[in-house]
Length: 176
Image (tube, rainbow, N blue to C red; front, side):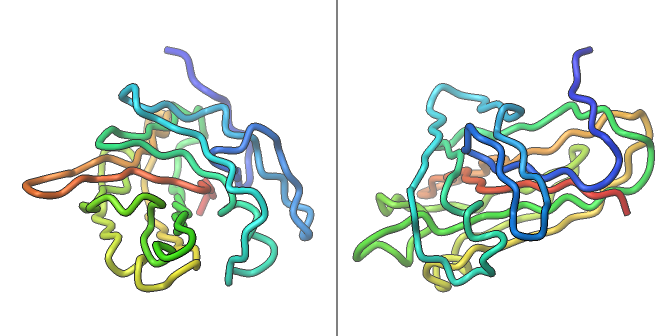
């Protein structure tokens, strides 16, 4: 088993970005070298300077993302101490122009996705995020690690007449 050893404290991953960043609070955001797309349609996008209504410390995270069409995004295994962790998924609207209220720039029909940690998921529906315009959305879930291995994923659910676009801008892992 090969895994990425995660040091104590909060780990921040700037998904879709090939370079690490330090925010104004001095927090390090790791480059996205840890994620895997389950299919062949994954894309890393750098949107360049964008105007986000998020706080300035996290706005740069929403300028890059990893996305797929109908496939999953998987992170881990991370080698961590056993215990309880909070996983925060940062999901942003990547739209522009007349489509800027859609969470994906080309206006595909969007189905729900599952935000998962340790195989347990919670439903995320893009409908609410799409209404926010250019605002990043964070969703935090809590999970328990009992074997020193942490797995995180954004899973496409699809369904009839739907197309799940798995999209992720940032990921944080914090011991609770």
